[in-house]
Length: 225
Image 1 (tube, rainbow, N blue to C red):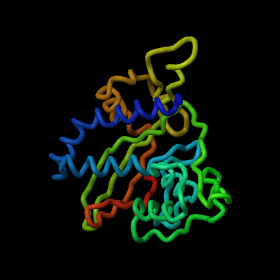
Image 2 (cartoon, rainbow, N blue to C red):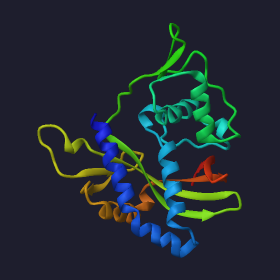
Image 3 (tube, rainbow, N blue to C red):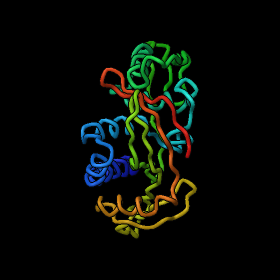
């Protein structure tokens, strides 16, 4: 529950703090706010939790080479029901990853999507999450012939100071190596966005190749800078 609250807070931070950035992107690259919002929305669909998938967004040369735990957890995260036939899982995977995606959901299920032989359905199981929100900030967006090349800054928001007997009104910003970068007011979206930008050299960065097809985005490649 604590992690869910943290996720809600971080999503609000990302959405609220992007206004100034979006206008800067438009001025530099002739990219509209609508395009940026579409990219951001898709990135939120595929960005996961490192304690479950080991990497919130793993690197891969093409989608069928991506870590399978991450693939099926992305699908599960975007399913609206918790009792699902295998066909629906497969359809959702195609919807998220596009026509180039060719992996088949394992009939025996996964660690977090279990098979029930009695009704021939799969069940999405609960996940224990920590108090660190796995977060990203869109840093650069460039148009390509096929879609976009997106650069993100990755970081962690540690909300452990907001729970317990001695609650404090700050969140700790860490890089992926768990190094503390600073403390911020979790309700001040502009302050957080500016803080991440000013300290961007202390955070990990990834580049994502997105394909635009029939007005829909699909991830093609992710690599570390």
